Image 1 (tube, rainbow, N blue to C red):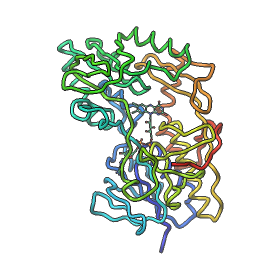
Image 2: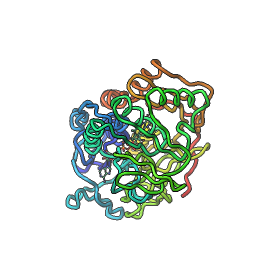
Image 3: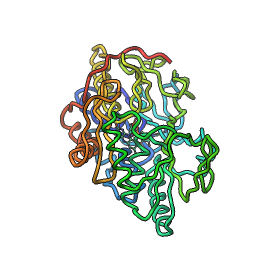
Image 4: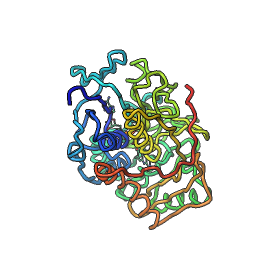
Length: 391
Ligand SMILES: Cc1cc2nc3c(=O)[nH]c(=O)nc-3n(C[C@H](O)[C@H](O)[C@H](O)COP(=O)(O)OP(=O)(O)OC[C@H]3O[C@@H](n4cnc5c(N)ncnc54)[C@H](O)[C@@H]3O)c2cc1C
């Protein structure tokens, strides 16, 4: 390779990993060099972060091992800035990496900046090491017969509260949420969810948003104070400021605004995927999930390979299929959805739902492995129709 086309993929989460291995497969007869940048050499299974927080050990998937045989170079480090004019990424403030094409897959994390005290006094599921330390604190609090407040009644908060309650029967677990847990589900799935939370002994403090996090309590919008020994924060989303700092067009939340083929509208040699991309479909904007992220990664890998062969990119189409929610290791509920992620008529609960959810959570790693050998289909549904995004 004298002067290969250099593709840099930033972030080796679900979408960056899939984009890198699929790109390698799709471009194996072309003169390309692919580099994947990620701060950790261990692949983080974000879908299982609540299991770590509850004290479970996960499989140790190493990124270099997952990339074996693909020719993708792995660089361990943080992307610290992007120079779009010079087409360079700086890694760890020191190493400059040139790119011809950039895939931006930096994901998202839970926002602890908006509510005062959250950053200082609450734990999050943002980082596996912190989630592990949280699990150690949980064990200590349980030994004292204490309690934990899980703030946020979205799917992550529900999964975390249920997992902790199942693993730590000596703890009092309270789910604190401004809205009803499972509000996005249909009546039957939501009723099942609530019955299971009751069975697991998860108390609920519903209807008032948390306005302040204190060292030993959370304060609610109506002034009530909920005392607690430990706080897990699962609500609100933030993304890396890197794109906005580099002058790449982003929306109000910092997500890269992309066109119908997932190219940045301001910098067409940059592709944004997963939680870091503002992707619009005819039915509305995609919200960050693995379910939607993996198809964006597959589509982008295929787009880059097409364009390197002189072909036109195709529009991205996606529609949601399900809201899979684990309720500990022995129970789960799956709400099947319309393309816009509103509840459909059917749901699955109990043992069948446990198996379904486990299949969802465990499928990405085998998909990466298989994608090194063949082009896998990862699109569950093409129910949506792509439109050009607006900021
Ligand atoms: C507990 C929990 C349960 C969930 N359950 C579901 C579910 O059941 N179904 C579902 O569809 N979704 C679920 N999600 C959401 C899902 O995990 C995300 O939508 C998905 O991880 C997004 O993938 P991504 O590749 O965009 O980002 P991520 O998986 O977050 O990966 C981003 C990667 O970029 C790296 N990175 C960040 N900054 C930098 C930098 N500056 N330089 C280099 N690398 C960087 C990160 O370390 C990470 O490896 C869940 C999330 C949580 C927390």
